[in-house]
Length: 481
Image 1 (cartoon, rainbow, N blue to C red):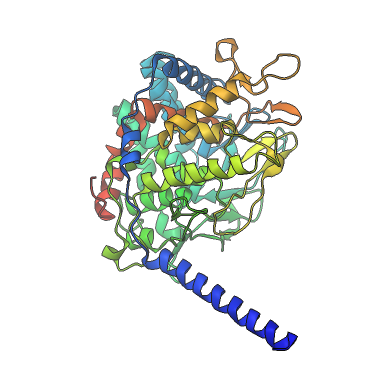
Image 2 (image 1 turned 90 degrees about the horizontal axis):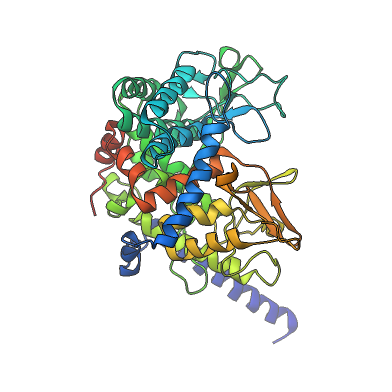
């Protein structure tokens, strides 16, 4: 056999291998085995925290809560997007609204004060017309007024986009507050949910929801603009909370067909010999815990795309996120030789700020098929929010983060809540030792809700008893475990 013939054979073998791999991947994604809970996962649901665990978790929760109580605009009381700017993120407000029942139950604020603040927040949002389009709220608004940001005061010229994901997180938080406080709060949230026109954001041709409506000018929703061509297509945690709420909308004329939830693409992959799971676009850890902050997947069995004529495996989403978390941690451990910050108890990649950068990690296995390790920058809230699925590993990481010291003996990332701190800085590295002293609402928020859910299930209980959530469960034919 000459050299060229040998090369042709090699190429043919390679092509066949790639075809087989592609077929196998497509098969697992479209008609693969169901992803169901193991006995090991079931054991995590009843994990018993020790008194020392409870003390640590209470301190972290208190720090996160203090962010939402203190980092606000006046008089609207809306949570700031970040400590370094005055602009408000409506997603952060969703976490803020869910934080208030936690604050009451933990004894950090009175019920009366929390309820009054909830009313102020909702009125600040709902009594304006310049902060929403089709009932879907803008991503960024003014923390002091609830309207379009005052760019003379903000650090950046923020986009004016009625964002489906940010609205979803806002509404999820509002639903939690509605179930807890009832009365006037519940009536306002009922109106907020009823006003959201998800159908206006839905593309019939592709079968997917748009990421939002974008204003062409600083006039915002009152001026020209249009529906964004970018859509939510992959079945991960941002998408599921959006489609869950859109399917459960009070007005059927504004709701989407439940089949759209199951139309989201389910791509199954695995790392080496670890268990396979449905992966997200970039593999960042928040794409496996955001929806779990509210939807109680512990008590829901694997869903069933086939019941809606859609391809894809049935998935137990609690199990899926546990597998994703453990795989993510393992990949961080494997990369420790390249990035000194990483280690057995130092892991967790999720969007975060670091110096002048906003990093969004890419960690395989993912749909993108690539990694971006963000120079070894860890976001403490990532491992902290994973406590719902992997309490042992999460606690070990949180203890490690809290113990880290620089050469002068100062904490690298821990910021003592008893001294007014917000528990952890947004990110840190060990090479060099540096904790980035900025906090974001969408980072402190999931860690607060996740820890409370792992301890008491409070947010899960409140969210799932709301009529929108009940309606979504029914329309999506989700079954109790």
